[in-house]
Amino acid sequence: MLLTTTPYVEGYVIKKYGPLVASEAVMGTNLFRDYFAKVRDVVGGRSGAFQTALQEARMLILKEVEEQAKKAGCNAVIGMDLDYGEVSGKDKNMLVVAAQGTAVYIEPRR
Image (cartoon, rainbow, N blue to C red; front, side):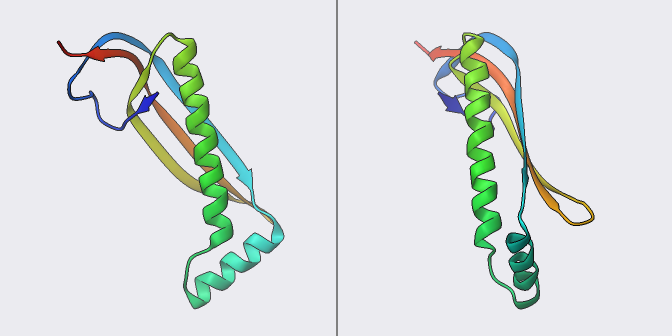
């Protein structure tokens, strides 16, 4: 299934517009991830633990968006938007990843 941020797919015509498809993932980070992320903030560098958590969340929600589009009889999602955020609590941080787009059925232009 094609997932794209563009409003159309060059060389294809939209035959049917389906519903808005969306998914969110809120993933907790454990104490060690939080600690090492804070260390990285001080000394610089990339936080592999947070990157892995974000990648896992992104793959999960993109799969869910794809499944919603398939259930609606569509073969692509256009206008995709991905958003990332963090919710901080007293002792815990949560990573938030959200995606949405419009499910469509496309065919090659003749």
